[in-house]
Length: 634
Image (cartoon, rainbow, N blue to C red; front, side):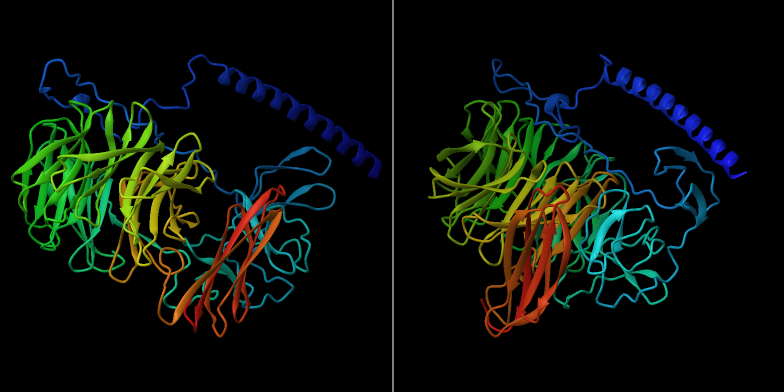
Protein backbone atom coordinates (compact mmCIF):
# COMPACT_ATOMS: atom_id res chain seq x y z
CA UNK A 1 0.00 0.00 0.00
CA UNK A 2 2.79 2.41 0.92
CA UNK A 3 4.58 1.71 -2.39
CA UNK A 4 1.39 2.39 -4.33
CA UNK A 5 0.85 5.71 -2.52
CA UNK A 6 4.40 6.79 -3.25
CA UNK A 7 3.97 5.92 -6.93
CA UNK A 8 0.73 7.87 -7.09
CA UNK A 9 2.42 10.80 -5.40
CA UNK A 10 5.32 10.72 -7.86
CA UNK A 11 2.87 10.64 -10.78
CA UNK A 12 1.00 13.65 -9.30
CA UNK A 13 4.29 15.45 -8.85
CA UNK A 14 5.21 14.91 -12.51
CA UNK A 15 1.77 16.09 -13.70
CA UNK A 16 1.94 19.20 -11.51
CA UNK A 17 5.41 19.99 -12.79
CA UNK A 18 4.26 19.73 -16.43
CA UNK A 19 1.20 21.87 -15.72
CA UNK A 20 3.33 24.52 -14.03
CA UNK A 21 5.85 24.51 -16.89
CA UNK A 22 3.06 24.99 -19.45
CA UNK A 23 1.53 27.81 -17.44
CA UNK A 24 4.87 29.60 -17.07
CA UNK A 25 5.58 29.29 -20.81
CA UNK A 26 2.23 30.87 -21.75
CA UNK A 27 2.63 33.60 -19.09
CA UNK A 28 6.16 34.43 -20.34
CA UNK A 29 4.93 34.65 -23.94
CA UNK A 30 2.18 37.10 -22.90
CA UNK A 31 4.72 39.29 -21.10
CA UNK A 32 7.04 39.34 -24.11
CA UNK A 33 4.19 40.33 -26.44
CA UNK A 34 3.03 43.06 -24.05
CA UNK A 35 6.50 44.49 -23.57
CA UNK A 36 7.27 44.55 -27.30
CA UNK A 37 4.15 46.55 -28.23
CA UNK A 38 4.93 49.58 -30.34
CA UNK A 39 2.17 51.44 -28.53
CA UNK A 40 3.72 51.08 -25.09
CA UNK A 41 3.65 54.45 -23.35
CA UNK A 42 6.88 56.24 -22.54
CA UNK A 43 7.80 56.18 -18.84
CA UNK A 44 8.39 59.90 -19.03
CA UNK A 45 5.43 62.25 -19.23
CA UNK A 46 5.79 65.40 -21.28
CA UNK A 47 4.55 67.60 -18.48
CA UNK A 48 3.21 67.22 -14.98
CA UNK A 49 -0.60 67.19 -15.05
CA UNK A 50 -0.78 69.25 -11.90
CA UNK A 51 1.40 72.04 -13.31
CA UNK A 52 -1.07 74.19 -15.28
CA UNK A 53 0.33 75.80 -18.39
CA UNK A 54 -0.68 79.12 -19.82
CA UNK A 55 -2.02 77.72 -23.05
CA UNK A 56 -5.62 78.02 -21.87
CA UNK A 57 -5.15 81.62 -20.72
CA UNK A 58 -6.56 84.17 -23.18
CA UNK A 59 -3.82 86.78 -22.96
CA UNK A 60 -2.60 89.41 -25.37
CA UNK A 61 1.16 89.98 -25.51
CA UNK A 62 2.30 93.59 -24.99
CA UNK A 63 4.01 93.56 -28.43
CA UNK A 64 3.22 91.48 -31.48
CA UNK A 65 6.67 90.02 -31.90
CA UNK A 66 6.83 88.51 -28.39
CA UNK A 67 5.90 84.84 -28.26
CA UNK A 68 3.16 83.71 -25.93
CA UNK A 69 4.13 80.07 -25.97
CA UNK A 70 4.23 78.75 -22.38
CA UNK A 71 7.12 76.71 -21.14
CA UNK A 72 6.35 73.22 -20.02
CA UNK A 73 7.39 72.58 -16.42
CA UNK A 74 9.90 69.79 -15.82
CA UNK A 75 8.51 66.31 -16.05
CA UNK A 76 6.93 65.04 -12.85
CA UNK A 77 4.99 61.82 -13.21
CA UNK A 78 1.71 61.87 -11.30
CA UNK A 79 1.96 58.51 -9.61
CA UNK A 80 5.11 56.88 -8.24
CA UNK A 81 5.69 53.17 -8.69
CA UNK A 82 3.04 51.18 -6.85
CA UNK A 83 4.03 49.45 -3.65
CA UNK A 84 2.69 45.89 -3.32
CA UNK A 85 0.70 45.04 -0.23
CA UNK A 86 1.80 42.12 2.00
CA UNK A 87 -0.04 38.82 1.55
CA UNK A 88 -1.50 37.62 4.85
CA UNK A 89 -3.55 34.53 5.71
CA UNK A 90 -4.42 31.57 3.47
CA UNK A 91 -2.33 31.17 0.32
CA UNK A 92 -3.96 30.03 -2.96
CA UNK A 93 -0.89 27.92 -3.68
CA UNK A 94 2.61 27.50 -2.32
CA UNK A 95 5.80 25.79 -3.50
CA UNK A 96 6.85 22.57 -1.80
CA UNK A 97 10.44 21.78 -0.92
CA UNK A 98 10.74 19.44 -3.92
CA UNK A 99 9.72 22.22 -6.33
CA UNK A 100 6.15 21.06 -7.04
CA UNK A 101 3.13 23.29 -6.72
CA UNK A 102 0.11 22.02 -4.86
CA UNK A 103 -3.22 23.76 -5.36
CA UNK A 104 -4.96 24.22 -2.02
CA UNK A 105 -8.48 25.37 -1.31
CA UNK A 106 -8.52 26.19 2.40
CA UNK A 107 -11.26 27.36 4.69
CA UNK A 108 -11.48 31.06 5.55
CA UNK A 109 -8.81 31.94 8.08
CA UNK A 110 -6.66 28.86 7.43
CA UNK A 111 -3.07 28.95 6.23
CA UNK A 112 -0.90 26.56 4.22
CA UNK A 113 1.64 24.56 6.26
CA UNK A 114 4.12 21.82 5.36
CA UNK A 115 3.20 18.65 7.25
CA UNK A 116 6.49 16.86 6.51
CA UNK A 117 5.20 15.22 3.33
CA UNK A 118 2.99 17.77 1.55
CA UNK A 119 1.36 21.16 1.92
CA UNK A 120 -1.96 21.04 3.79
CA UNK A 121 -4.57 23.45 5.14
CA UNK A 122 -4.18 24.18 8.85
CA UNK A 123 -5.37 26.53 11.56
CA UNK A 124 -3.61 29.89 11.71
CA UNK A 125 -1.92 29.79 15.12
CA UNK A 126 -0.92 33.45 15.00
CA UNK A 127 -3.05 34.38 18.02
CA UNK A 128 -1.83 31.50 20.20
CA UNK A 129 0.71 32.34 22.93
CA UNK A 130 4.34 31.58 22.07
CA UNK A 131 6.10 29.02 24.28
CA UNK A 132 8.61 31.69 25.37
CA UNK A 133 8.07 34.80 27.44
CA UNK A 134 8.70 38.05 25.55
CA UNK A 135 9.52 40.79 28.03
CA UNK A 136 7.69 44.16 27.97
CA UNK A 137 10.81 45.94 26.74
CA UNK A 138 11.08 43.63 23.73
CA UNK A 139 8.98 45.87 21.50
CA UNK A 140 9.00 46.11 17.75
CA UNK A 141 10.17 49.60 16.80
CA UNK A 142 11.26 51.16 13.50
CA UNK A 143 11.71 47.86 11.64
CA UNK A 144 11.26 48.17 7.86
CA UNK A 145 10.52 44.85 6.11
CA UNK A 146 10.07 43.91 2.46
CA UNK A 147 6.49 43.62 1.14
CA UNK A 148 5.02 40.28 2.23
CA UNK A 149 7.50 39.71 5.06
CA UNK A 150 6.60 39.49 8.73
CA UNK A 151 8.50 40.18 11.96
CA UNK A 152 9.90 37.36 14.10
CA UNK A 153 11.76 37.25 17.40
CA UNK A 154 15.20 35.71 16.76
CA UNK A 155 16.07 35.28 20.42
CA UNK A 156 17.81 38.66 20.65
CA UNK A 157 15.86 41.14 18.60
CA UNK A 158 12.99 41.46 16.16
CA UNK A 159 13.95 40.71 12.55
CA UNK A 160 12.25 40.56 9.16
CA UNK A 161 11.44 37.13 7.77
CA UNK A 162 9.39 35.33 5.16
CA UNK A 163 5.80 34.49 6.14
CA UNK A 164 6.45 30.76 5.75
CA UNK A 165 5.81 29.56 9.31
CA UNK A 166 9.17 27.84 9.07
CA UNK A 167 11.55 27.40 11.97
CA UNK A 168 13.18 30.69 13.00
CA UNK A 169 16.64 30.84 14.57
CA UNK A 170 15.19 31.31 18.02
CA UNK A 171 13.28 29.69 20.88
CA UNK A 172 10.04 30.87 19.23
CA UNK A 173 8.31 27.92 17.53
CA UNK A 174 7.31 27.74 13.83
CA UNK A 175 3.66 28.62 14.46
CA UNK A 176 4.43 31.67 16.59
CA UNK A 177 4.49 34.28 13.85
CA UNK A 178 3.03 37.76 13.83
CA UNK A 179 0.75 38.13 10.79
CA UNK A 180 -2.60 39.69 9.99
CA UNK A 181 -2.34 42.45 12.62
CA UNK A 182 -3.27 45.86 11.19
CA UNK A 183 -2.08 48.77 13.32
CA UNK A 184 -2.36 52.53 12.99
CA UNK A 185 0.62 54.41 11.46
CA UNK A 186 3.36 54.75 14.09
CA UNK A 187 2.07 51.91 16.29
CA UNK A 188 3.99 48.72 17.08
CA UNK A 189 3.06 45.10 17.77
CA UNK A 190 3.51 44.08 21.43
CA UNK A 191 2.89 40.76 23.20
CA UNK A 192 0.33 41.31 25.99
CA UNK A 193 0.98 37.97 27.67
CA UNK A 194 -2.05 36.49 25.91
CA UNK A 195 -2.01 37.78 22.35
CA UNK A 196 -0.35 40.21 19.95
CA UNK A 197 -1.93 43.66 20.01
CA UNK A 198 -1.33 47.10 18.54
CA UNK A 199 0.22 49.60 20.96
CA UNK A 200 1.85 53.02 21.02
CA UNK A 201 5.60 53.09 20.46
CA UNK A 202 6.61 54.37 23.88
CA UNK A 203 10.17 53.06 23.76
CA UNK A 204 12.22 55.75 25.41
CA UNK A 205 9.62 58.38 24.57
CA UNK A 206 9.06 61.44 26.72
CA UNK A 207 6.12 63.87 26.52
CA UNK A 208 7.94 66.50 24.48
CA UNK A 209 9.45 64.11 21.95
CA UNK A 210 7.70 62.48 19.03
CA UNK A 211 9.90 60.15 16.95
CA UNK A 212 7.47 60.13 14.04
CA UNK A 213 4.95 62.99 14.15
CA UNK A 214 1.39 62.26 13.11
CA UNK A 215 -0.10 63.98 10.10
CA UNK A 216 -3.63 65.39 10.01
CA UNK A 217 -6.07 65.93 7.17
CA UNK A 218 -6.88 69.64 7.10
CA UNK A 219 -9.31 69.65 4.17
CA UNK A 220 -10.75 66.68 2.29
CA UNK A 221 -13.69 68.31 0.54
CA UNK A 222 -13.28 67.75 -3.20
CA UNK A 223 -9.78 67.59 -4.70
CA UNK A 224 -7.74 70.15 -2.73
CA UNK A 225 -4.21 70.85 -1.53
CA UNK A 226 -2.37 71.81 -4.70
CA UNK A 227 0.01 74.79 -4.44
CA UNK A 228 -0.14 74.72 -0.62
CA UNK A 229 1.71 77.57 1.10
CA UNK A 230 1.91 78.00 4.88
CA UNK A 231 2.83 80.84 7.23
CA UNK A 232 2.58 81.32 11.00
CA UNK A 233 0.06 84.05 11.81
CA UNK A 234 0.12 86.72 14.48
CA UNK A 235 -1.79 84.30 16.76
CA UNK A 236 1.14 81.84 16.39
CA UNK A 237 -1.10 79.42 14.49
CA UNK A 238 -0.61 78.22 10.95
CA UNK A 239 -2.58 79.63 8.04
CA UNK A 240 -2.50 77.81 4.69
CA UNK A 241 -3.40 79.09 1.22
CA UNK A 242 -4.12 76.44 -1.43
CA UNK A 243 -5.98 75.59 -4.63
CA UNK A 244 -9.32 73.79 -4.85
CA UNK A 245 -8.87 71.85 -8.09
CA UNK A 246 -12.47 70.63 -8.25
CA UNK A 247 -14.03 74.09 -8.12
CA UNK A 248 -11.12 76.17 -9.40
CA UNK A 249 -11.06 78.30 -6.23
CA UNK A 250 -8.55 79.87 -3.85
CA UNK A 251 -9.06 78.57 -0.31
CA UNK A 252 -7.52 79.42 3.06
CA UNK A 253 -7.36 77.12 6.09
CA UNK A 254 -6.66 78.55 9.55
CA UNK A 255 -5.45 76.06 12.16
CA UNK A 256 -7.28 76.30 15.48
CA UNK A 257 -4.52 74.61 17.48
CA UNK A 258 -0.73 74.20 17.06
CA UNK A 259 -1.05 70.66 15.62
CA UNK A 260 -3.82 71.76 13.22
CA UNK A 261 -6.09 68.92 14.37
CA UNK A 262 -8.95 71.35 13.79
CA UNK A 263 -9.09 74.10 11.18
CA UNK A 264 -11.53 76.48 9.55
CA UNK A 265 -11.63 76.62 5.76
CA UNK A 266 -12.94 79.50 3.67
CA UNK A 267 -13.23 80.14 -0.07
CA UNK A 268 -11.50 83.47 -0.63
CA UNK A 269 -11.79 83.78 -4.42
CA UNK A 270 -14.06 81.81 -6.77
CA UNK A 271 -14.19 84.13 -9.79
CA UNK A 272 -12.89 82.04 -12.68
CA UNK A 273 -9.99 79.57 -12.45
CA UNK A 274 -8.04 81.01 -9.52
CA UNK A 275 -5.76 80.04 -6.65
CA UNK A 276 -2.94 78.50 -8.67
CA UNK A 277 0.73 79.10 -7.77
CA UNK A 278 -0.28 80.46 -4.36
CA UNK A 279 2.14 81.99 -1.86
CA UNK A 280 1.44 83.42 1.60
CA UNK A 281 3.24 85.81 3.94
CA UNK A 282 2.24 87.69 7.09
CA UNK A 283 2.09 91.48 6.81
CA UNK A 284 3.36 93.96 9.38
CA UNK A 285 -0.24 94.24 10.62
CA UNK A 286 -0.25 90.52 11.43
CA UNK A 287 -2.69 89.71 8.64
CA UNK A 288 -2.05 87.15 5.84
CA UNK A 289 -1.07 88.46 2.41
CA UNK A 290 -1.52 86.02 -0.51
CA UNK A 291 -0.34 86.13 -4.12
CA UNK A 292 -1.67 83.77 -6.78
CA UNK A 293 -2.47 83.38 -10.48
CA UNK A 294 -5.87 83.92 -12.09
CA UNK A 295 -5.78 81.60 -15.11
CA UNK A 296 -9.06 82.95 -16.49
CA UNK A 297 -7.57 86.39 -17.08
CA UNK A 298 -3.83 85.64 -16.88
CA UNK A 299 -3.36 88.18 -14.08
CA UNK A 300 -1.40 88.34 -10.86
CA UNK A 301 -3.84 88.71 -7.96
CA UNK A 302 -3.21 89.66 -4.33
CA UNK A 303 -5.43 89.01 -1.30
CA UNK A 304 -5.10 91.02 1.89
CA UNK A 305 -6.89 89.25 4.73
CA UNK A 306 -8.69 91.45 7.22
CA UNK A 307 -8.56 88.84 10.01
CA UNK A 308 -6.26 85.94 10.94
CA UNK A 309 -8.59 83.34 9.40
CA UNK A 310 -9.12 85.39 6.20
CA UNK A 311 -12.92 85.27 6.55
CA UNK A 312 -12.95 88.83 5.23
CA UNK A 313 -10.50 89.94 2.57
CA UNK A 314 -9.86 92.42 -0.24
CA UNK A 315 -8.62 91.31 -3.69
CA UNK A 316 -6.63 93.30 -6.25
CA UNK A 317 -5.56 92.39 -9.78
CA UNK A 318 -2.71 93.41 -12.06
CA UNK A 319 -2.48 93.61 -15.83
CA UNK A 320 -2.81 90.39 -17.88
CA UNK A 321 0.61 88.71 -18.14
CA UNK A 322 -0.05 84.93 -18.18
CA UNK A 323 1.15 84.87 -14.57
CA UNK A 324 2.59 81.69 -13.06
CA UNK A 325 4.86 80.68 -10.15
CA UNK A 326 4.20 83.54 -7.72
CA UNK A 327 6.09 83.95 -4.44
CA UNK A 328 5.49 86.70 -1.88
CA UNK A 329 7.42 88.22 1.01
CA UNK A 330 7.13 91.43 3.00
CA UNK A 331 9.91 93.89 2.30
CA UNK A 332 11.72 96.17 4.68
CA UNK A 333 9.18 98.91 3.94
CA UNK A 334 6.35 96.70 5.25
CA UNK A 335 4.73 96.16 1.84
CA UNK A 336 4.40 93.06 -0.27
CA UNK A 337 7.13 92.07 -2.73
CA UNK A 338 6.15 89.44 -5.29
CA UNK A 339 8.37 87.49 -7.70
CA UNK A 340 6.60 85.70 -10.55
CA UNK A 341 6.94 84.27 -14.04
CA UNK A 342 5.44 86.40 -16.82
CA UNK A 343 4.32 83.82 -19.37
CA UNK A 344 3.63 86.43 -22.05
CA UNK A 345 7.27 87.55 -22.14
CA UNK A 346 8.87 84.51 -20.46
CA UNK A 347 10.65 86.81 -18.00
CA UNK A 348 11.18 86.92 -14.25
CA UNK A 349 9.26 89.92 -12.89
CA UNK A 350 8.98 91.53 -9.47
CA UNK A 351 5.90 93.45 -8.35
CA UNK A 352 6.35 95.85 -5.41
CA UNK A 353 3.17 96.80 -3.56
CA UNK A 354 2.91 100.50 -2.75
CA UNK A 355 0.28 100.05 -0.03
CA UNK A 356 -0.86 97.37 2.42
CA UNK A 357 -3.58 96.00 0.10
CA UNK A 358 -1.39 96.17 -3.03
CA UNK A 359 -3.98 98.27 -4.88
CA UNK A 360 -1.02 100.01 -6.51
CA UNK A 361 2.21 98.33 -7.50
CA UNK A 362 5.31 98.72 -9.63
CA UNK A 363 6.49 95.92 -11.92
CA UNK A 364 10.15 95.38 -12.82
CA UNK A 365 11.81 92.90 -15.18
CA UNK A 366 14.60 91.20 -13.22
CA UNK A 367 15.80 88.62 -15.77
CA UNK A 368 14.91 88.29 -19.47
CA UNK A 369 17.75 86.11 -20.77
CA UNK A 370 15.87 83.06 -22.05
CA UNK A 371 12.83 81.42 -20.48
CA UNK A 372 13.38 82.43 -16.87
CA UNK A 373 11.43 82.85 -13.66
CA UNK A 374 9.73 79.49 -13.14
CA UNK A 375 9.57 77.91 -9.65
CA UNK A 376 10.22 81.31 -8.06
CA UNK A 377 10.91 81.72 -4.36
CA UNK A 378 11.51 85.06 -2.63
CA UNK A 379 12.65 86.06 0.85
CA UNK A 380 13.64 89.37 2.46
CA UNK A 381 17.32 89.87 3.22
CA UNK A 382 18.85 91.67 6.23
CA UNK A 383 18.90 94.88 4.16
CA UNK A 384 15.12 94.71 3.67
CA UNK A 385 15.46 93.92 -0.05
CA UNK A 386 14.40 90.82 -1.92
CA UNK A 387 16.43 87.67 -2.51
CA UNK A 388 15.02 85.46 -5.28
CA UNK A 389 15.72 81.89 -6.40
CA UNK A 390 14.22 80.67 -9.68
CA UNK A 391 14.62 78.30 -12.62
CA UNK A 392 16.17 79.20 -15.96
CA UNK A 393 14.36 76.71 -18.26
CA UNK A 394 16.50 77.58 -21.27
CA UNK A 395 19.71 76.46 -19.57
CA UNK A 396 18.19 74.21 -16.89
CA UNK A 397 19.86 76.27 -14.16
CA UNK A 398 18.89 77.45 -10.72
CA UNK A 399 19.62 81.18 -10.52
CA UNK A 400 19.45 83.87 -7.86
CA UNK A 401 18.76 87.57 -7.97
CA UNK A 402 19.49 90.10 -5.22
CA UNK A 403 17.38 93.26 -5.40
CA UNK A 404 19.41 96.43 -4.87
CA UNK A 405 16.43 98.47 -3.67
CA UNK A 406 12.86 98.08 -2.41
CA UNK A 407 11.41 98.26 -5.94
CA UNK A 408 14.04 95.89 -7.39
CA UNK A 409 14.70 98.44 -10.13
CA UNK A 410 18.17 96.91 -10.36
CA UNK A 411 19.44 93.55 -9.24
CA UNK A 412 22.44 91.24 -9.23
CA UNK A 413 21.85 87.87 -10.96
CA UNK A 414 23.99 84.78 -10.42
CA UNK A 415 23.82 81.17 -11.61
CA UNK A 416 23.94 78.36 -9.04
CA UNK A 417 23.91 75.14 -11.06
CA UNK A 418 21.68 72.58 -12.80
CA UNK A 419 18.42 72.13 -10.94
CA UNK A 420 14.70 72.70 -10.50
CA UNK A 421 12.20 73.38 -7.68
CA UNK A 422 14.37 75.95 -5.85
CA UNK A 423 13.42 77.48 -2.50
CA UNK A 424 15.32 80.19 -0.63
CA UNK A 425 15.78 81.32 2.97
CA UNK A 426 18.25 83.53 4.84
CA UNK A 427 20.14 81.97 7.73
CA UNK A 428 21.35 83.42 10.99
CA UNK A 429 24.57 84.40 9.19
CA UNK A 430 22.57 86.77 6.95
CA UNK A 431 23.38 84.79 3.80
CA UNK A 432 21.01 82.96 1.49
CA UNK A 433 20.59 79.19 1.59
CA UNK A 434 18.87 77.54 -1.38
CA UNK A 435 17.43 74.04 -1.61
CA UNK A 436 16.65 72.50 -4.98
CA UNK A 437 16.26 69.28 -6.97
CA UNK A 438 19.25 68.21 -9.09
CA UNK A 439 17.67 66.16 -11.92
CA UNK A 440 20.82 64.42 -13.17
CA UNK A 441 21.57 63.19 -9.65
CA UNK A 442 17.91 62.71 -8.66
CA UNK A 443 18.92 64.33 -5.38
CA UNK A 444 18.10 67.12 -2.95
CA UNK A 445 20.92 69.66 -2.99
CA UNK A 446 21.65 72.88 -1.08
CA UNK A 447 23.70 75.90 -2.08
CA UNK A 448 24.92 78.28 0.63
CA UNK A 449 25.84 81.70 -0.72
CA UNK A 450 29.31 82.84 0.28
CA UNK A 451 28.36 86.53 -0.04
CA UNK A 452 25.24 88.67 -0.45
CA UNK A 453 25.50 88.57 -4.24
CA UNK A 454 25.81 84.76 -4.20
CA UNK A 455 28.75 84.92 -6.63
CA UNK A 456 30.08 81.73 -5.05
CA UNK A 457 28.33 78.93 -3.18
CA UNK A 458 29.09 75.91 -1.04
CA UNK A 459 27.04 73.07 -2.50
CA UNK A 460 26.03 69.91 -0.62
CA UNK A 461 24.04 66.82 -1.57
CA UNK A 462 21.56 66.35 1.27
CA UNK A 463 19.59 63.28 0.17
CA UNK A 464 20.30 60.97 -2.76
CA UNK A 465 18.39 57.87 -1.71
CA UNK A 466 16.11 57.21 -4.70
CA UNK A 467 14.65 60.13 -6.64
CA UNK A 468 14.20 62.89 -4.06
CA UNK A 469 14.09 66.68 -3.76
CA UNK A 470 11.14 67.80 -5.87
CA UNK A 471 8.74 70.39 -4.39
CA UNK A 472 11.34 71.52 -1.85
CA UNK A 473 10.50 74.26 0.65
CA UNK A 474 13.09 75.74 2.97
CA UNK A 475 12.94 77.97 6.04
CA UNK A 476 15.27 78.83 8.92
CA UNK A 477 14.85 76.97 12.20
CA UNK A 478 15.22 78.33 15.71
CA UNK A 479 18.89 77.30 15.65
CA UNK A 480 19.52 79.56 12.64
CA UNK A 481 20.05 76.58 10.33
CA UNK A 482 18.04 75.48 7.28
CA UNK A 483 15.02 73.20 7.50
CA UNK A 484 13.62 71.64 4.30
CA UNK A 485 10.52 69.64 3.40
CA UNK A 486 10.45 67.82 0.05
CA UNK A 487 8.98 64.97 -2.00
CA UNK A 488 10.37 61.46 -2.45
CA UNK A 489 9.20 60.56 -5.96
CA UNK A 490 10.10 56.86 -5.86
CA UNK A 491 8.30 56.12 -2.60
CA UNK A 492 5.65 58.84 -2.84
CA UNK A 493 6.61 60.10 0.64
CA UNK A 494 7.06 63.39 2.47
CA UNK A 495 10.58 63.87 3.85
CA UNK A 496 12.35 66.53 5.88
CA UNK A 497 16.02 67.48 6.24
CA UNK A 498 17.45 69.63 9.03
CA UNK A 499 20.84 71.24 8.46
CA UNK A 500 23.41 70.57 11.17
CA UNK A 501 25.33 73.79 10.45
CA UNK A 502 24.87 77.16 8.77
CA UNK A 503 26.29 76.09 5.41
CA UNK A 504 24.40 72.76 5.50
CA UNK A 505 27.35 70.51 4.69
CA UNK A 506 25.62 67.96 6.91
CA UNK A 507 21.92 67.34 7.50
CA UNK A 508 19.64 64.90 9.29
CA UNK A 509 17.05 63.33 6.97
CA UNK A 510 13.75 61.80 8.08
CA UNK A 511 10.75 60.34 6.26
CA UNK A 512 7.64 61.88 7.83
CA UNK A 513 4.60 60.56 5.97
CA UNK A 514 4.23 57.47 3.78
CA UNK A 515 0.50 56.81 4.15
CA UNK A 516 -0.23 57.44 0.44
CA UNK A 517 1.27 59.41 -2.46
CA UNK A 518 2.06 62.44 -0.30
CA UNK A 519 4.56 65.30 -0.15
CA UNK A 520 3.99 67.25 -3.33
CA UNK A 521 3.47 71.02 -2.96
CA UNK A 522 5.08 70.97 0.49
CA UNK A 523 5.57 74.20 2.41
CA UNK A 524 7.23 74.62 5.82
CA UNK A 525 7.09 77.35 8.48
CA UNK A 526 8.37 77.58 12.07
CA UNK A 527 6.37 78.94 15.04
CA UNK A 528 7.62 80.94 18.03
CA UNK A 529 8.53 77.73 19.88
CA UNK A 530 10.76 76.65 17.02
CA UNK A 531 8.34 73.85 16.06
CA UNK A 532 7.80 73.37 12.33
CA UNK A 533 4.47 72.89 10.58
CA UNK A 534 4.48 71.42 7.08
CA UNK A 535 1.51 71.71 4.71
CA UNK A 536 1.40 69.40 1.71
CA UNK A 537 -0.79 67.56 -0.78
CA UNK A 538 -2.10 64.00 -0.52
CA UNK A 539 -2.39 63.20 -4.22
CA UNK A 540 -3.93 59.78 -3.67
CA UNK A 541 -6.93 61.09 -1.74
CA UNK A 542 -7.02 64.67 -3.02
CA UNK A 543 -6.55 66.09 0.49
CA UNK A 544 -4.68 68.96 2.12
CA UNK A 545 -2.57 67.60 4.97
CA UNK A 546 -0.44 69.13 7.71
CA UNK A 547 2.19 67.76 10.05
CA UNK A 548 3.79 69.38 13.11
CA UNK A 549 7.41 68.35 13.54
CA UNK A 550 9.40 69.09 16.70
CA UNK A 551 12.39 68.12 18.81
CA UNK A 552 14.67 65.41 17.46
CA UNK A 553 13.63 65.78 13.83
CA UNK A 554 12.77 69.38 12.95
CA UNK A 555 14.11 71.17 16.04
CA UNK A 556 17.45 70.98 17.79
CA UNK A 557 17.57 72.99 21.06
CA UNK A 558 20.73 75.04 21.54
CA UNK A 559 19.99 76.21 25.07
CA UNK A 560 18.01 75.12 28.10
CA UNK A 561 17.96 71.91 30.17
CA UNK A 562 17.75 69.54 27.19
CA UNK A 563 20.08 68.70 24.34
CA UNK A 564 19.82 66.51 21.26
CA UNK A 565 23.01 64.67 20.36
CA UNK A 566 23.49 62.87 17.02
CA UNK A 567 25.84 60.11 15.89
CA UNK A 568 26.21 58.57 12.44
CA UNK A 569 28.05 55.46 11.21
CA UNK A 570 28.51 53.65 7.89
CA UNK A 571 29.73 50.11 7.18
CA UNK A 572 29.17 47.21 4.81
CA UNK A 573 26.30 44.96 5.84
CA UNK A 574 25.70 46.36 9.32
CA UNK A 575 26.52 49.65 11.06
CA UNK A 576 26.05 50.78 14.65
CA UNK A 577 25.70 54.39 15.78
CA UNK A 578 25.67 55.39 19.45
CA UNK A 579 24.69 58.91 20.52
CA UNK A 580 26.01 59.73 23.99
CA UNK A 581 24.85 62.55 26.25
CA UNK A 582 27.37 65.14 27.48
CA UNK A 583 29.09 64.46 30.77
CA UNK A 584 26.53 64.56 33.55
CA UNK A 585 23.57 64.18 31.19
CA UNK A 586 21.18 61.26 30.97
CA UNK A 587 18.77 59.79 28.40
CA UNK A 588 15.17 60.99 28.33
CA UNK A 589 14.41 59.88 24.77
CA UNK A 590 15.95 59.09 21.43
CA UNK A 591 15.59 57.50 18.05
CA UNK A 592 17.35 56.16 14.99
CA UNK A 593 17.07 55.87 11.24
CA UNK A 594 18.81 53.93 8.47
CA UNK A 595 19.08 54.31 4.70
CA UNK A 596 18.37 50.57 4.45
CA UNK A 597 16.78 48.54 7.27
CA UNK A 598 16.84 49.22 11.01
CA UNK A 599 17.70 46.14 13.07
CA UNK A 600 17.40 47.71 16.52
CA UNK A 601 16.76 51.10 18.07
CA UNK A 602 16.86 51.47 21.84
CA UNK A 603 18.80 52.98 24.76
CA UNK A 604 22.26 51.45 25.06
CA UNK A 605 22.90 52.77 28.57
CA UNK A 606 21.40 55.39 30.85
CA UNK A 607 23.41 58.01 28.96
CA UNK A 608 23.40 56.79 25.34
CA UNK A 609 21.09 55.67 22.54
CA UNK A 610 22.02 52.97 20.01
CA UNK A 611 20.70 52.34 16.53
CA UNK A 612 21.81 49.44 14.32
CA UNK A 613 21.18 49.49 10.56
CA UNK A 614 21.75 46.61 8.18
CA UNK A 615 21.53 45.78 4.49
CA UNK A 616 20.43 42.26 3.44
CA UNK A 617 22.71 42.41 0.39
CA UNK A 618 25.72 43.45 2.50
CA UNK A 619 25.89 46.84 0.77
CA UNK A 620 27.16 49.89 2.63
CA UNK A 621 24.53 51.04 5.10
CA UNK A 622 24.39 54.36 6.98
CA UNK A 623 22.62 54.63 10.32
CA UNK A 624 21.93 57.68 12.49
CA UNK A 625 21.12 57.68 16.20
CA UNK A 626 20.02 60.61 18.31
CA UNK A 627 19.75 60.96 22.07
CA UNK A 628 17.60 63.45 23.92
CA UNK A 629 19.42 64.31 27.10
CA UNK A 630 18.57 66.05 30.35
CA UNK A 631 21.34 67.81 32.14
CA UNK A 632 24.12 69.95 30.65
CA UNK A 633 23.45 71.94 27.51
CA UNK A 634 25.48 71.26 24.40
